[in-house]
Image (cartoon, rainbow, N blue to C red; front, side):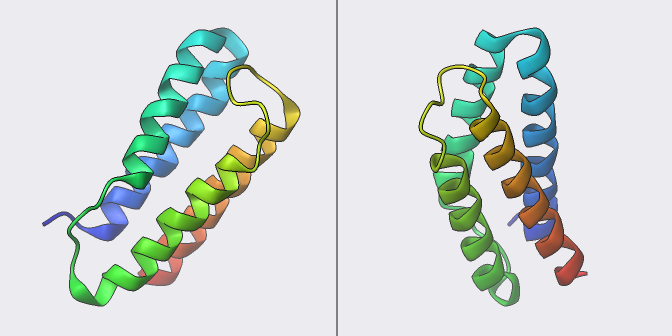
Length: 97
């Protein structure tokens, strides 16, 4: 069983990497984005006391990212959605401490 905080932190780090990667290699960033979305959609087993916040956080992050109409190339809306999702996850990590 993985710690919810550790999983969320790994998603935050991946989102940050995607944001940076879009500036240098758009194709790789799109690939990394698909991986992140798959991870966010995947069922994870976490401690019962962390489960509710963790599941809601993952759902909200994925929903936020999916609000971007175009996800196959860099655009401002996608960058803003990724940034917002990342910040939401960071806020939940801080709340869970």
